[in-house]
Amino acid sequence: MRGREKHDDMHIIRGLGNLPPRFRGAAITIGNFDGVHRGHQAVIETLCLRARELKCPSLVMTFEPHPARLLYPERAPRRITGVRGKARWMEACGLDGMLILHFDHELASLAPEYFVQKILVEGLAIQDILIGHDFRFGAGGKGNLDTLL
Image: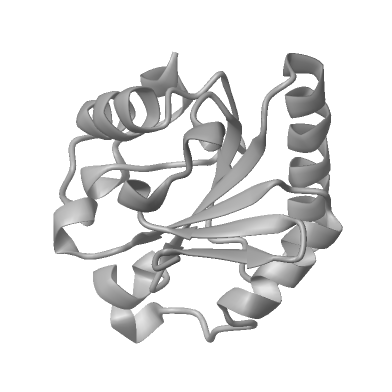
């Protein structure tokens, strides 16, 4: 089962091409979630509640390596935990899956609108998304909440 791992009850999915069909139409959140601190836990718990209301899976999208390692390596934060440690913490919060996208120059250069259309709409067919107020994505970090609306 290359590209997918079952971590007890939570799936670890490496790459959009390995997404099991049951995760299409998920409620998602996006971020690095290194350390999964209390703020992260609150976001994930809220996401899981919303997914249950919508009767869909809950999914976190994260990136490997951390985007800062590619974008500004001299300021990249030290890693708190690896993928498996992160997965254990997220599973404890009740998530159904963790989608890991490989963060490279190609992904970093996507226009925010293209990211929304190709990854969130066509690739994942998301039902709902929960993000923080300061969330940025896409080339130059130009995508924000308004881009998602």
